[in-house]
Length: 519
Image (cartoon, rainbow, N blue to C red; front, side, top):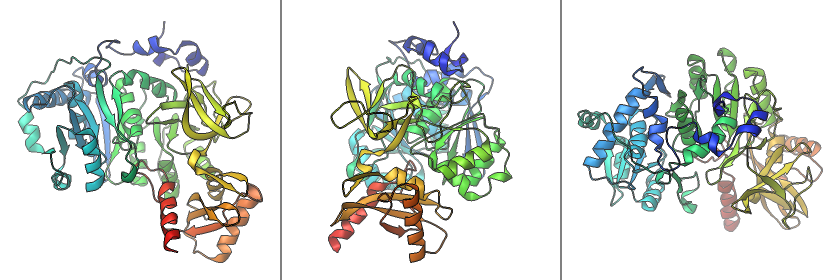
């Protein structure tokens, strides 16, 4: 029987994808498994084959091989043991993609410790809250961030510099892994606010196997792809779908280091001849907004995105520029990826704006408030069947007659105005169709007459004016309905975003609430 990586059709996924077939892709088994071995060591064959290509914001390209990362991770694992680290200890690291980043990630996992990636833009409070939660044995970072980290009591800070690499150089370049599949391997923080810090999502080594459903059918990764994911590997998409998934299949991956620049990204995509990219919706929008995409040559065969829906103007840009459909991939850090569009499957029709269909073996349903199934076209809460009961995804959705699901916003992004239910996502998508609107975010604000009304925050190069406000209101009303439009519009130079690049509507809601108290 063929391996799952050799099947490319949607029909084959439904016929052959199951748990047993996933395990056949790995060297480990249900009892003993190690993520670092599966992603790095078993692919280190002495050939010097590239594992990771790093596009640095400053223009430098850095290429790391499986051999280099495998040997360095083993040495780092020995260094950790020599420094008193025990299996199960947490090793936090706050580094941009680089050799030290990958040695920290895989070295800790190799010796049975738990890797805890930290976003490099965390300030003192954001870092302290996460370190207090996971209580790491060590924090690996650079000299600049060490100045911040050293202000936190009870944490040993190690600077990842040449001196550390030289200290490790004499240690053995192999390490015998002994982890069980159900041992903890990674603690992953979501991109929540520091005031409402979510607990770390805890992943075992076994999570790598489950991840392959998303890799095969959400991003369409197959051996032979030239892959790239510009999302930071400190977050779920960049770590699991941009790093561990491709490396687990022996596929060379690419990433971005430093302050994001869309032109720099496009140059890397051209130079690396990338055929498969998975990115956040924001990345595609930023490429469009540069106006410079025509200056580059692209080689895409598969594209996917996650984080939030892509507006129609950006979808049109993708079609005209890359000539490949953008495939939505929906999930959360807590539940993983559950809805995909099967990139590369010739027998699967990608519907613009759709989240796609469930990954093989999963059951999802759009439900009414009473728990019964919603009719096609009717917005309800998206529920996932898990462990013999329905679990909420905290998202709203609708399903069409062919079983394709559509995202209708977070449950807390619903705006109920004078008895009418409106979706912030739909209003935003309509505003983004206006040629003078670059970005838009919509929230509900209190109204004495209607209970709530929609307020839009718009980023535009066009000067604010009452005429522009009226134009946007009319533009939205005519395309949605007479009641579904932003009754208030504010202009902004930029929108607040989470570290993962999503528009942060909660920040806008909090600002409005604070302003209302002042008034």
